[in-house]
Image 1: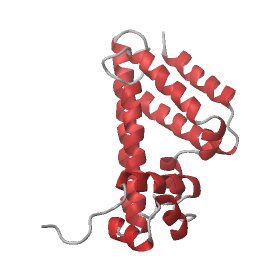
Image 2 (image 1 turned 135 degrees about the vertical axis):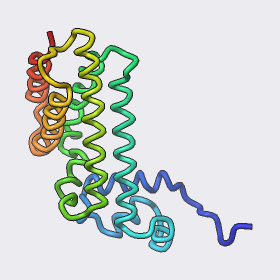
Image 3 (image 1 turned 180 degrees about the vertical axis):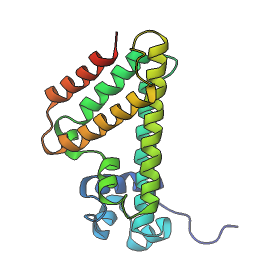
Image 4 (image 1 turned 60 degrees about the vertical axis):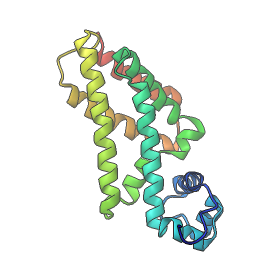
Length: 196
């Protein structure tokens, strides 16, 4: 028989709540009372379930990264047309860097700037996230090149790295002044440069 009372809360909902407050306030800007309110847990329950603030943050960051990867996998589905998938993916970034979403920014980018330089566990996750996104983009670009839809004069990995820098740079710049028209123009310039 298991000892103790079973948990009486939804772990996924608690992580989602914590993710929201970390995303809005940053790691250092998030207080324990913020987390207790967001997770609807008592201090004891929070520490029992997640250990400490840092451990909860890593769980929230993992959730955010997993959600982003799932979205990108749908957008860049290798069973569909590669160029259409890239266009869908890029349009999604325009949406995510415009309006209120643009002002909120990206938890991965914010975390990279706030913590990655001095937190090895965070740095490992951010590096893995960016490498995975870059690999997905390179694969889609390679498929589009093979289909004759994108120019073949540049290595897919090089184009993917440039695109990663463009997309994540948009997340930073548009946090202070989201400009949908400018974001769309940059994406269109990219598409025009590399498509036939």
